Image (tube, rainbow over the protein chains, first blue to last red):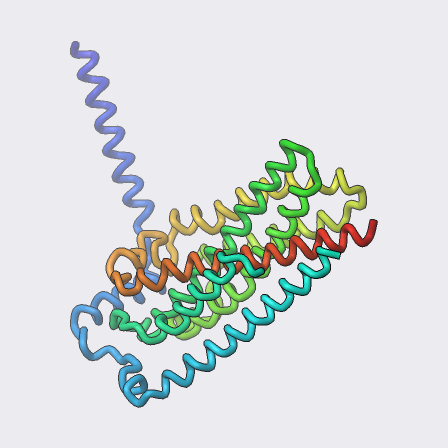
Length: 94
Length: 219
């Protein structure tokens, strides 16, 4: 009985020490990521409303021009893909 | 004529292009409006991973059944996947420049992992082109493909999660989903992922049929 409790105690100590060791090892150095992340958190908490977004640009209506341009390009690309697809079908049927 | 899922792909992406620009997004520092890149940059990578998965499944199918058709599918899917890595990398560089302040950082294991994964797949095509015998090429390429996929998965999906990374959802960083991907963004992000995967399948479909037509013509 005493032997078993001894072993259990030892195991618990071992596990705890591994845990402490891994925490020690995984402690990250302050780097780009940490600074960015802490900046992000601080700023998000302190100035929720002061974050610069393109709100004014949107209200001027110019954003719709950009969306139209993107949509036209995309539709052209899809149209071209459809054209290639059809042309290929003709070749397959030959 | 044109299959329904191809039309669905076009409509889904068009929806995300338009509504992704107009929808209200969370106001976050550093990210500002670039948070909308989530609708465009991330789905490209999902499509790339999907194509690589498709490629490895057909590589395994080739090893099981020993048919050249599966080899052709596997090869074309890998090509399509690698093509999608290009806009993925370029848009990633762009986004990094304006949020992390640099085009490329070797501090981020995800960037390094992607660079290595692209090189691994380039080696796949070099390996293919260096073998003339069809059967032999198919078999060796299929075996290499399995290795390449596993390596890519480790480099892109596993290692960045074990160490520090600038990417959200990696290295103890919270993912977008945790605190700033609100439900409005989800309604654009998920259709975008489905749309881009379908579009990559469309391109794969065209490439595959073209390869078959050329193959038949050569014989």
